[in-house]
Length: 194
Image 1 (tube, one colour):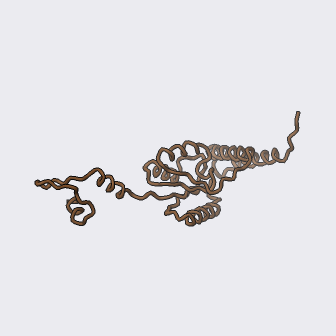
Image 2 (tube, one colour; image 1 turned 90 degrees about the vertical axis):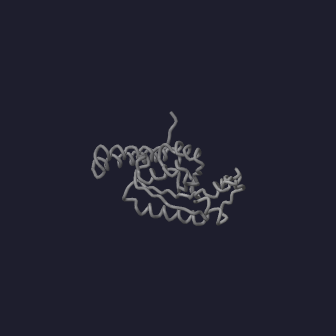
């Protein structure tokens, strides 16, 4: 009935109809119909912050990504998360990975590389490449290696301290503050050759 209706409307007219009423379509017709019937892929802006206290930062990040995508003329949706960059069970990230696997999107827009994930970026990049998804990073500026290593170490300690002591524990806050102050004092200390 669908093929009859499509023939009547001229949407898909068979190239030949047998005397018995069998409809025949060419490979070209089927290919053209299949390509036109595909759902258009969208662009996803992904924004993430580590803690609920950074909600204002998340709103700013979302606004920056939205402005960028509007300026580029993309048709887009935004997925946001609040959670550690080494936590892969965040609802938004899971949704994003599902959309990548189902080939529903053409691009992912992120403000900074570490907003997607802290570790394992290359694995997600590979998943994107085999599914025809491009990752577009708005700001590619990088910190110096020491700053990146310090940020990664603080992120790891934060996650494990939260699991061990709890998120609001004084021990957690003390441990993180100690790591930060030690890292800052190392940066301020000039290197000497032995």
